[in-house]
Length: 114
Length: 116
Image 1 (cartoon, chains in turn cyan, brown):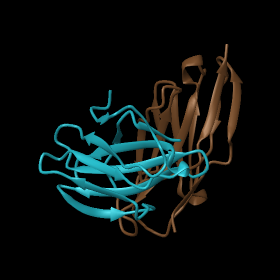
Image 2: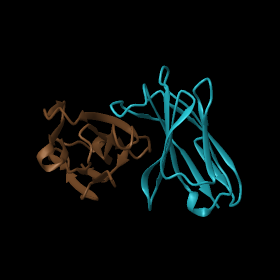
Image 3: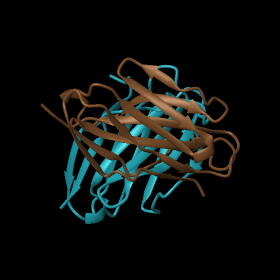
């Protein structure tokens, strides 16, 4: 158990809908990352937050947004969902948000868009 | 731009065989970090090791060992006396301090199957 929690574990929804994925980092970690794992794209970095502020952005679609709250949990919002958004979404956390840190991953949320 | 290549898509071995998973990386940074993660069939990503660019010492942890060679930009992972429980997808990853912050750039992964 990495100490990172993600809810829900599975999500099935229809095209055009909006969903929210939630992540709680390990105790003491200030930085949260979101990654998407799909068959065609592999594991891709989406976005990073550090202590409530956005620190880095990767291949995140405009339909997707995220935030980190004062209690350090994070939410990833996916809207106008398309079939191609079906993927495993991971949240990871690290202590300081620097490259030297190990990132510990949550169990993931499997999103299926039908 | 940073890149990680794991040329071996799938490897199949028989239990107790040794197996090496290859990882080659590209970066222009002088300070960078290399990681290996394991993704068992249950799906979670498990951290195995981190290496920084200034430390080329090889590391051994039980049946696992890692060989980091800057001259060939490689960070290979060897499992000695493999076991069925080692069956998983293994990912090599890179983070750069200067260019792209602490995001992880992953390789495509190597599916390792250990047969009894």
